[in-house]
Length: 141
Image 1 (cartoon, rainbow, N blue to C red):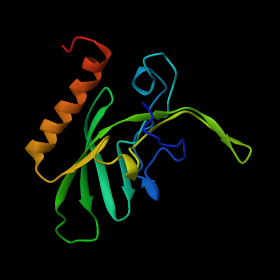
Image 2 (image 1 turned 90 degrees about the vertical axis):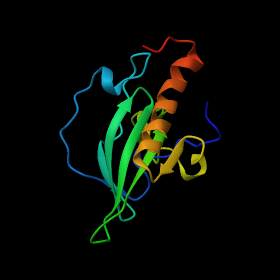
Image 3 (image 1 turned 120 degrees about the vertical axis):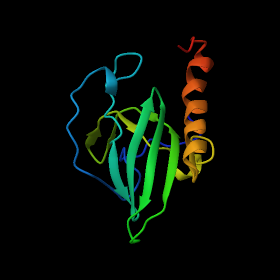
Image 4 (image 1 turned 45 degrees about the vertical axis):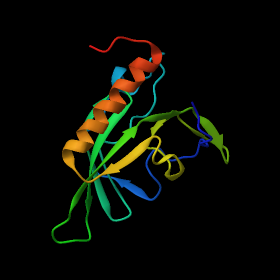
């Protein structure tokens, strides 16, 4: 389901800078159900004065902790997202490999949610992570 979202690089949210993490080898974790490899979303990144850290990922559902870096005692929020995949494409003579993408601003409220309460964030994550198998008619174990 595309929801009218265009295939635009990069895989990270706009203006984000990945925080150095361990390099992931190509394999099942970064691939799709069909075996195609998509560059995975980073587990940690920075964007617009916020730091994001992935707490959990299950299938296409992910829960990130969000901290505002411009404050001595930052408050913590959580972002629960449906991970999206974008096919490879060419732009200005350069090929962009297939990648996983954070929901766009336009998809927020449908594919991404900001929650201030940790328990509510976990509840939303479980809701999202259980939706995909149910939509495909698969049993959740």
